[in-house]
Length: 484
Image (cartoon, rainbow, N blue to C red):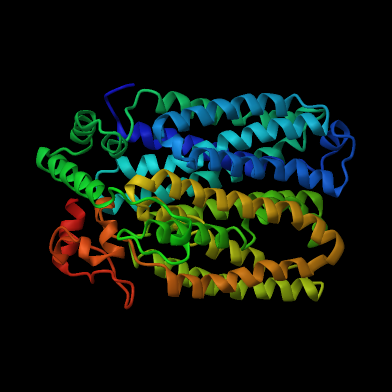
């Protein structure tokens, strides 16, 4: 394993993995209605089409579960990212050459498993190799911006290929996913693993070596090394017990943190984003009633808007904190989604969907990724993030598979399902989530148990809210957090 690390290469390697994820999320949505695809797949019915699209999501859930298993942490963050990219390439080759729904589904299952590996470990890899606390949230959140960019690019490529002839209309866009997976491997390979992973496995010297490359000041590297060791001592002997997910009596509240993260991501993906992602063109063309060309252009515009918003929310996520972004997002999304449902019920072409995307993209798109990547305890971080991401894919599968069938049977009423979860997001965040902004990873335990504090409260930056146990900001805290 390499002993050198370049955080910028780590960033771009994982980003390309998320571009691949976004590409797959969008590429079929723009070609499902083309005559070339319908001919190759022998005009699949609604249920078969839903399974073709949703098989990727269910397989991603399986990949996340594999990456979250207790034995998986022995492999390391770096290897999981590369292994996922390799599996994606194999699945893409099978998918792009498919002449039956069975072969296409098999290929998409492999792509999904590989994607599960990448998205469940990539955010952890970045969070654990980021030197400054104030950069951690934006750098992790921007991953969703790259995923949305991949989706937008896929839709625009699909639109361009609608003017082509023959099977290239859908096979070439599907095959292009290989480019991003290959780049993920090339960029990730030269790097060492996360310093936190080395310490977790008793490889302290390698951990120190990597920390010295991440931090320009030797004193910063030594301080972080000391804090990692302190965190590990706090978590010694604490095992995840099933009962703790309901009543957590442990000091570090590991089960509580995992449970909160799983529910947060699950709620985010029951709000309807994957339904919109995967069936964008179909929604505009079939259910809103736009012409095919107009529907393709609107799909490209909507996914581009989603990407821009995700980057915006990630870059400015340190302003206000995680909770405020999520609370405002849920409130405004509820307004737009309820208006969208009402307009659909009245038979009107609903532009409110663009308003919903505009709000969701900087709030509930990147913020859950940021939250779960930084609040999990070190000993269970791979499990916590993996289970959180598995909730994403399981809920996404449910919506993408059941959504079109629901459209066919109950029409616009299926959107009431999504409206309910947009509303539920607000009370869940308000009553259950704690503000994690500004805290070093090694100080997250203190957020759940103040007795574990290893230093004075003034050493920790971050916004608190009443009842969350967070420490209120002061000018001095901001300066210290910036240095860390």
